[in-house]
Each structure stands twice: as structure tokens, then as C-alpha cells.
Image (tube, one colour):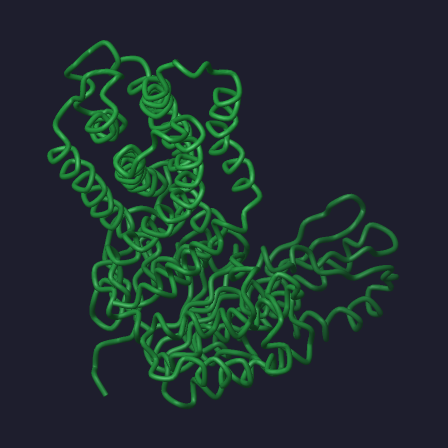
Length: 239
Length: 313
């Protein structure tokens, strides 16, 4: 399976878009907040608590979710919109390979925008108290949550002509509202599983929905299943 | 050579809500160049999308080399597609576009294949330029090059001459003839009859989603030229003596008097043309103007549609 050319093509297309600048600004918002915190917070403030809330209540459920959604939709939806997807589909490549490669490229672009922001925010807020685990667990949570978001976004971009609207409704209405007070609803929240990984090192926010190992499995499974659904959609929908 | 036709439609329909794009179409296409002729909205692009597996039939079956392309991606190794209205990635150079597609088709040396295909379409000199800066005609040729690079057995070309100047058209048409002569199957859509005549010895004519004629392009042309015509004659006086004489001569089938002129229906335009001046002299009628009515392409398609419906009854 030749995935390199499609991966590079998609990544290049995503990073050259004007909307990527807007997404980079959105991704950088926590850095601004961290900078303000670093300048204003007293020495005895609970740095870990602030960092934990920033990651679990803002970064994963809103910023990472929106960035991954928009980029994930762009990776496939834009090609469907402008017709360039014809040139990829009219080749003997496996459908699941094409979709998985596109999702992988979208995930890479998402991480390129989010991870530096997350790491810089940690260093600014935690200062000397930052250690490897206080950075790696949140990065793992963001990375796996965005992988699942990109998979869902890719699938949505093939199933509907309004993937962004549906994705934003899921993020705001389901994850941001219903899942915050209904425990069973949070089982269907990507952000909740991302937070479960972060809570392994930064436990100050809401109680995790599952432990870290199941969270990893569920997020990877969500990405795999949505890629498979996307491949099925690719041979069923009008291109 | 296998007996399986390159393209086979069996009772294929495709509808979108209440709109029928393709209606119960059946045909088989083998080696050589076949034109897909029809007016805008006739269902040409949908037919080619069905061939390419970019959409599924609502009813019936589409088989390419005996298989459904959507469920058998390996068959794309034998197909080259030039979609309409879909320029390649603008941030890539022409060579990068063609090489990428050749690579995805698992061509052994995609760089060399890209260079060869771009040379065929006359873009070798600008292969290193980005497609975004190309004219419409140049983008059309990049699209053709990417379809040729993997040396396919079947080419599906949706309006490939759009945006090309006359010299480029000649070049592309000669490429298509060569591909057809090599035993490949080339299906090429157009809404221009004389364009199809130059490209394809065989033709399928679509009107409002219906396949209304198929066969030799020359036979379809003959059929079209022999169709009943309406000719409007503006004559001095009321034109009735002339109309009566023409009816008596058998050169016309029907006569109507419209807005001070006479409209004649005839199945024999040549006979009418010979009879008209002689009978005008004999009946002492001054002819001011002679013009065909409804002689545009839409009327031609409407005639073929009516004829096909009549044959189906």
C-alpha cells in the first residue's frame, strides 16, 4: 500500500490553507492564558490545579476538539468539494488505506498546531515544577483524543455535507453540556477519554470516566472504527 | 483478448430525489473511441461517473471489465479518468500531479511515466510549473496526462476538449485516435456533434437521461440530417398559391400559416429546396425570406428522443 504520497499531499494541502492560520491562533490561546497566569500568579498559587483545569476543561474539550474537527473535515471534505478526490479514488489503492492515510495526515497537522501550545503552556504555568510526566500525560491525552476526533471528522465529511455543523453540535451540545452532568453520556464523549489520560498525572479536575488503559484502547478503537466507516462511505456515497 | 466488454450498463438508472439523471440505460462499449453525445444536463457526466464508480446506480448494474468498480478498486489499474470541472491540486506542479497519480497506480517508474504523459499532451516545457498558474486549457491537458500516465486500457473523458484552442483540440483528438487504434476503449463526452464526429466513429446519444441512439457516428449524422424539418417562408401576398403548389408537388407534408408567413414541414429538404424556386416562379410569388425553424441542437436531440420513444412503443 502506497500511503506516503497521499499523506504528504494531504499534509501539504492542510498546512497551506488560510484557515490553518486561524486554527493556529486558536491553538495558541492557552499560551496567552498561561503567560498571563505566569506574570500574575503569586508564588504560592496552585500551579498544577490551574494547569489541570486549563488542559481538562479548555484545551481538550474545546480547542483540541475544534482544531481536530476542522482539520479532519478539511482532509477529506475539501477534496470532495473541489473534486480532487476523484484523482485519488480512481486508483487501485485500498479505500481503507486512503481514508486512514488522510486521517493520519489530519492528525499530524492537528498535533503540529496543538502540541507546541500545550508544552509551552505547561512550562509557563508549572515553571520549575514541570516534569516529564506532567507534560507527557496531557500530550498523550490530547494526541489520542484528537486522533479519534480526526477519524470522526473524516467519516462525517463523507456522510454529510455539513460535517462541521454536526461536529460542533457534538462538541458543544453533547460533550460540553449533556455529558458533563449525565455520567452515562460521558461514555460517548471523546473528550472524556482524553481527560482520563490527563487525570493520570493531573487529577484536580473531574473524575475520569475510565482508567488510562481502557481510555487508550477506546480512543484508538474509535479512530479505527470511524476510518473503517469512512472507507465504507467512500464506496457508497456520491463523490 | 477477453470477450468481456470494457463498459457494460444493464438497465441502469440514477436519480437524485425527483430528478432522473439516467433512465434505464443499457449498452456495452468495446475497444475504440466512442462518443457520448448529449445536451447539457442530458446525463453524460452522471453516466461517466457511474462508469468511474464515483456514484452508484439507483437501479441496474454497471460493470467495468466485468466487475463493479466501486467494490473492486483493483480495476482502476486499467482505467484512466478525466473528470469534468475538477482541476488537479493547484499547489503541485504538472509533473508532481501526474507522477503522484502514476505512483498511486503503482507504475514502475512514475517519474518517467509522468514525463512521457506530459510530452504526449504537449506540456513537457511547463512540467515544472504549478497547476494553479495554468490556463483552463493547460489544466485540461494535465488532467489528460494523469489519466494516460499508467497506460490504461479504458479512458473515461468528460468534455476533455473544453477550454482548448483549435490546435490543442487537433492534438488531443489525434491522441484519442491513436489510443483507439491501439485497441484501447476510449469514451469521450461532448455536447457538440461535430466534435464527436471528429473524435469518435461510434456514438451514444443521451437525451434527458435516456439513451436515444447508438451506433456509427456517420449513421447518426445521416439520421439527423434526414429528420423532418420545418421551414418558414415569408412570401409576398398570402402565399397560398405557393403553398398549394408545394403540397401538390409532394415536397411538403404539412403547411401552417403563421404571422404572415408559411411554415412547411418536410422530410425531404433537398426536394423542397429544388421545388421552391420553380413553384414560386410558376405561382408568381415573391419570396422574401426562407429560414429553418427549430434547427438548433436542442431540436435535434428532441427529435431523437421522440423517435426513440416511438420505437419503444
